[in-house]
Amino acid sequence: MEASQYAIVDLIPQRAPIVMVDGFAGIDEEGVSHSRLTVSEENIFVDEGQMSECGLIEHIAQSAAARVGYLFREQDKEVPLGFIGSVNKLEVKQWPQVGDRIETSIRIVQEVFQVTLIEAECCVAGEPIATCRMKIFLDI
Image (cartoon, rainbow, N blue to C red):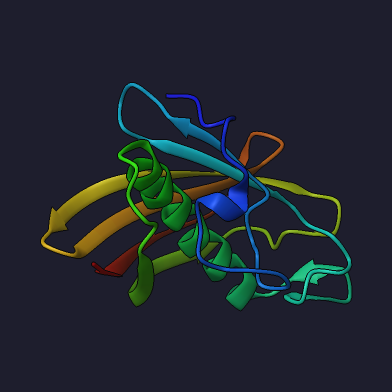
């Protein structure tokens, strides 16, 4: 599925300066969604040229939110709010730096009612820099 007809702010409830996704490429045939963020010096989660752990976690959460927002928009429904329930197995091999383009894949592990368990992988220049599992609660 291609998502180019939507602006990122149409897919997520966050607004500047907290927007941590600048593109959503859609959902592939295996159900994996793809988003991206180019790290800028102005990003509120960047200090001394490097994105913080909080920024990386927020980017992953918003990547998952963009997936949900896309699915809801395709059904002409309002984008729901989501809340991070837990972050597990966070492994960071390299911290994103200013100028890096983070490309993130979100795979659904399990969905039960309004609770979704995802696996995320973040890459820079095709190399994995971080992975985690995240539990997200939707307010629908």
